Length: 471
Image (cartoon, rainbow, N blue to C red; front, side):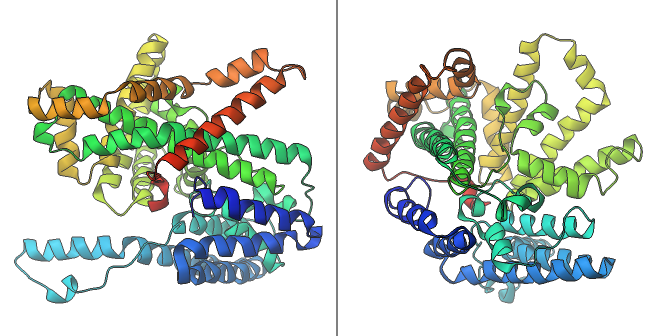
């Protein structure tokens, strides 16, 4: 069940909200917990027991960690959580690479080829990282272990952020489990934020995802340079509006239930360096790796060379976190490389150039990186990038057919909207012209109209992918 589905909008969410608000405060978390289990079971079936197992294990493990405060208990928590994530997410990847290595040296293994494929549970990367941050924060004394299982299980399983983030840290919402009062203002803010995210996802991300999918599915020998750039532009906008739209919906849903999640995106495509990009993109993930991996590795406190090594390690793992594929590892290392280049001295040179040059550099690096993220394999990614810079016309006949179906007025309008709203234009206009009580209704009407339009889009099409579900 995805947030942009009609069954979620008009059946699940209204029923859950109604039950939630007529329930006494002391039982609200229990209702939210049960609703979250139902939500997860709807799509994942028996894998809900894996989620429940994670909640039970980390609940009791944190209490032991709080009591003992020794390295053995936190090591068990880390190994168990990462071991579970590693098995479900990387078993197939590991076996495929091991089998390829054996074949390279002339060994053919029927046993490996006949191993069953392990299905990836939706959201496991997100809730595992939340559980890890909780145990680590208890170990380092940043918070106390929660001794109420329902409250903790609600934190780990809460459906607004369960399957695709943002990664919510326990310390950020700890006080809200027992001290929150959902009111009309918070509900109204949440509904508005949800409508914005829903509109970004359905009106912008979905149409552009179709364009990107069509172009990346082409035989690259038939792909022209202009179409290659159109494809990576479409994907760049798709992944931003898809994921930031989902985060907006998650934050909005959290507000409806009285929880305030931290922001996850801050207009990353206006960045003027890769370093700034990572301060604006998927903030909950980048800050997680900073606090729980980069800093424990030594950060930038152990000399220049160690800093570079730490950055490479962090971004290699960042790439691998996104998916069990060498493409993602290369994507992470690609970003890590440019962060190191900026640290070496290029960043200071960049700061002396015009802002437009800084922006072009950043967007160019990010878009090239997205090719590794989107392509099916490294060979395809390199071929695609080569086409982007080789100024080839491809197979002219096929390209003309593709242009007729993809480059139409509707997609031009969507692309223009994507460019416009990837910048804080709406925020600037809203802050400058829609601040008084007499004019706020303009913003409300505009957002509601967008939401209605998004509903129409949803009912008119079955094409409704969510990129980050597979991460």
